[in-house]
Each structure stands twice: as C-alpha cells, then as structure tokens.
Image (cartoon, rainbow, N blue to C red; front, side, top):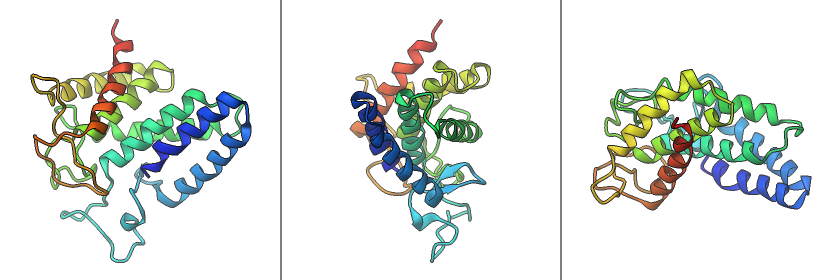
Length: 217
C-alpha cells in the first residue's frame, strides 16, 4: 500500500500542471484496483501487501491472533489521499470516493490512538507492539490536520486527536530536534527502539507541522 503515497499524488499534480486528464484517469484506475486488492472494508484499513490478507497461506496474524495492519503503511495511504485531494478537480467523476475513503480511514484511526497521542507499529495489536512509533503517527497527524484545515473532517471531533498526536510527536524529539522511535525500513510491523531515527519520518513530521500550525488560533 506504500505506493499509494508515491504515485497517485504525483500523477494528480501532473494532470493539474499539464491539463491532461489522462494522467488522472490512469491514476484513478490503478488506485481503485489497489484498493480492491488490499483494503479491508470491515476494518477500514489497508493491508501492507497480500501476505497479510485473510485468504493468505499461511495466514499471518499477530502473536495475539489479531490481523496485521501496519501503521506506517496506512500512514502513507492517508497522507497520499490528502495530497491527491488537494489537486483533484471538484468535477472529477470519482472524487467523492476518495473523500469517503479519507473520512472512513480517519474515523477508524482515531479509535486506535493511545493515551500518549501516538499509534503503534501494529495498529490492531498494541500489546504486541507496545513501543511508540513516530513515522506512522506523523503521517496520521498530517493527514488529520490537513483534513480539518480543508473542511473534510469535523474540527470539534478531530482537533483534540491532532493536538494529542502533535504533543506525542514532540515528546519523541531530543534536545537537538532529532525525531526518535522511528520504525526502520521494512515491510511489516517490527519492534522500535528510542535510538531509531530515519529521514522519512522527519519529512512526515515536517508535513504534520505544516498543517498543525494552521490550526493555531
């Protein structure tokens, strides 16, 4: 599901820059093909890839028997949706489908935030992944804040979640401004250590900050 952050926003912006709708139409076709393959309509979350789907053999579950939904993978998707919606014309045929998906994922994700404002590497099993995870949290914070700022999400409902996430993320910074508790490069939930820090999480943190600052009265 990571690719839904990489390609769709670029193709949407290419369509906006050139006026050529073929880029948007191609993106739309591939996006919903991926959605049908990896999205769980009961959980309103994306599987990282087909290894984690309920029909996979062998069936991969967490140590506590829970389905595996990767925090950063879903963060890529939520952030990607925000960046697609930003440049998608209002009259595009399927825009309402993107809006609904963005809202459905957002509503699910706020139920999974922990008391410190963070999300864990394995979204549905924080017992297996008790450590905070800042890269997924940063993407969620960005997506939710963007949604409020652009009228897609209810401010009264989501602002407390965003504030809590931002406070939690700032708690992952050291005195030099380095972001910690970042799951290293991988393709599934994995243990995280305080000293783990990677640039993609810093980028997500800056994206989050660029939207959170707009919410300050």
